[in-house]
Amino acid sequence: MSQENIRSAPAKRVTLDDVDSAERASRRRGILLMCGALICFATLDATGKWLSQSVPVWEVVWARYVGSTMLALAFMNPWRSPEGFSTRRPALQVLRACLLFGSTAFNFLALRYLQLDETMAILFAMPLVVSLLAGPMLGEWVGPRRLAAIVVGFIGVLIVVRPGLGGMHWAALYCVAGLFCYALYSILTRMLAATDSALTTAFFGSVSGVVLLTPALPWFWTLPPTAGVWLGLAALGALGGFGHYLLIAGHARAPAAVLAPYVYTQIVWMIGLGYLVFGNTPGPYTLIGASVVIASGLYLFYRERATRGDA
Image (cartoon, rainbow, N blue to C red; front, side):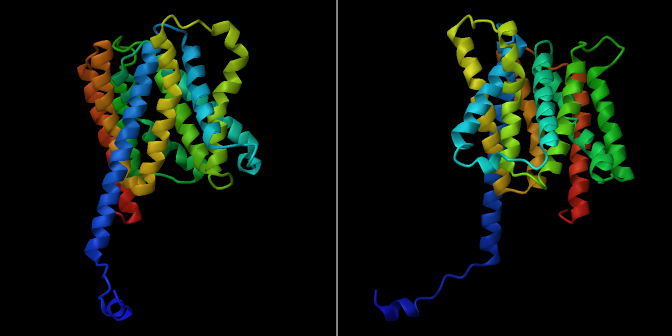
């Protein structure tokens, strides 16, 4: 084509419809990636529950952290870029890492005794706890409507747990402890975002379980009895690492407010895996309580969007 023809060719105009179409496509990809991450996390919990029938829970937790640390080191080299691993708030990083470790340990301890859907129904209250703690810790106080939604959400948790009525196993307390550990971990993650890089924060979180559990390894290590158990232990880190990768990729393509409600689809995967792997079916109290918690969480997301002018 000659220079004249090139100059005379009409330039392609980018319309608002094109922009909207690209935005919608990006959001759809983000939602698919988010759902993929949730499938990974549900499979991780199912694998951990299955493994705890053959080896000690602490061995499962240790394998989970060893796998995630190896993945972190494969993509982040502390010897070539040591400055990426320095922190301005070491005490806060250590505390956050310990909270993440506590959340993981309590979750796997609970899964040893409870069904997958029962643990997830309780852990769904995490956004409610974060909203409640954000006031005293971050100065982000909730209004009366959000506070009412939080109260309703906790009523949903009580329906699942039914304290004092003999309906839920005592191991539900592990779930509640893990819930508060993860909520505080989320708060500290937001606090550290102002001073430390995501690389630093991710590395501290990955290595915490290895540092805490490796010295005690001789006291809880049991030789895996089958090749399947070895494979399951190796898969824990891969599932967690790949799940977090999909989660980050999803948030890069769609706003958090768009993706947040899809977190609750994890209960579907938990119920399905619980039935396929362990033959468990959710009880009516679990379904009712989970529905109440999900409804209150969705209302909180709606209020957050409305306050920011997104809805």
